[in-house]
Length: 180
Image 1 (cartoon, one colour):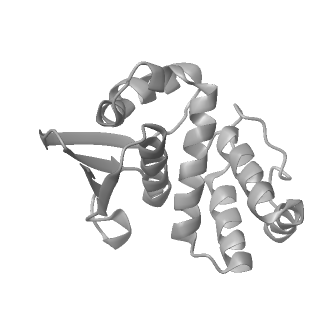
Image 2 (image 1 turned 135 degrees about the vertical axis):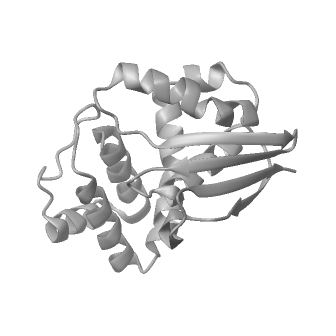
């Protein structure tokens, strides 16, 4: 996983819970990296999972809720570094539909082996979009947060349904998003 994810998690934890919490997580997890991250370097997925589990244990906030909050925060971090992706898509649904075919394609050019999820979409109604998320990491709750972060960025009120899920044995997670 790219270091930008870890630096963003570090920033979020310090902002929401304090530097002592971040240090406590590092002391508990003993990450192979030593907790020293650069945005373009690759780090073990296991470090992220262990850190989220430790933060959940310390804060008594579920891992799924933490990943969702982190996804909303991560969206703002990613867009601040790569604003072209939102600049090129002035509409929320058009932005979501561009994730796999445009954004992930460009990320693959920028970074070596980014190991991105696959996002497919279906739209039969102009106010409804169905996204299918597939990833061996099963970070669908992080994806939910990213999608919610995008809705906030585009000032779009949505109803969101996380249907079938890989955590429950489905081949992919299905997100039904309705624009209000």
